[in-house]
Image (cartoon, rainbow, N blue to C red; front, side, top):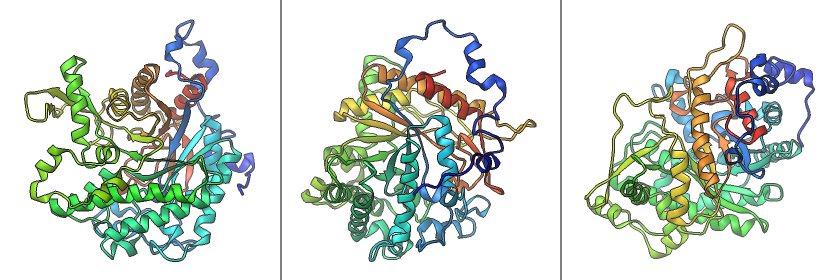
Length: 489
């Protein structure tokens, strides 16, 4: 069960008597209401009352406690402890110590008004070697977390794989080994089955593209391999197969009413400007740019152009595998950070990607270029192209060079700007009937940012990694007011 903590102890952790009470007066609702604003907010600017506002985290990035309660080693434990692989040699051994401090963080969520929380399960906490006998202590942790969320009135969304593959499976070939897909399906079905009495929303995987391409193509993420195109394509196929097998396994082992989807970082294709020909180019492009990811999951086939581009490097597959891959999902989660701008062309594919100039604005992470329109066009095109009826924005957020100011606060105006602009575009989509049902801000906490270690901060809550003290930022106040008023403020 979730154990309550005293307000005094909570205040010690976050440095104040209330999670957001530290904010200067100018940030409080009473002051904000007095600032120059339209006398009557436009109804079209508000989100539906049923819209789910949440935040998201990932197991290896926040939990710590890597040697506790029977957890097995993962590829990220191995990779981060390999010299030269991560910034400053940083590891996730402690991270945010969420494994022990989650009650405090749940109270932070409640203070902000969050209605949902997306967490991931560490596969190696449930099956330390990836398969075999389950570890009851690992499962108990997630049951306690879920109980705590529900007691606080926060709906849990569970991701079953967020990149931390058990090392024992990697030693047997990892995702290159088709048996790993079966092991994942077994783990996913078992875990969802044990949690589905209280959790109704499950995602099989987070960002297939990221862990395939960064981990096995460029090698900058765990397990740090640089495979040739043929091996990457076949591995990618087995990952897609693992997703489909997991969808079926979850359905077979959970209670009626359980919803299954995926969190996919779809490459969002945005028309360079809103002319008919460029919009049509963006529609064509979203299929091709995501050919081996969301496209194959939705359609159960690889596009002709994708197979043509790969030629002899194309994956081997069977009709039965493709049917499994296209197992129907109840919803699609979209992780949206950047935009890929496209224009119409007379090329075979019918579009051209317009590469960003060096002057293009970006956040603290160089890859995180600012393209707010992505949060409009992404869900709009996914809905139109594949007929998806229910979507969530399962990640959106920004890195910032956050610093503690002289008065003890964090004024992350750049992140607040980023969120305001993106969420304005999301509101546009929702107001036009695009079926986005909720939004999960990445991230609740500053955390272990993979190969970037602790250098890059994505949280709306600042974490002092030496003391684990939490300090809500300006963006946390912005998000709290947005949730309360249901409009971008």
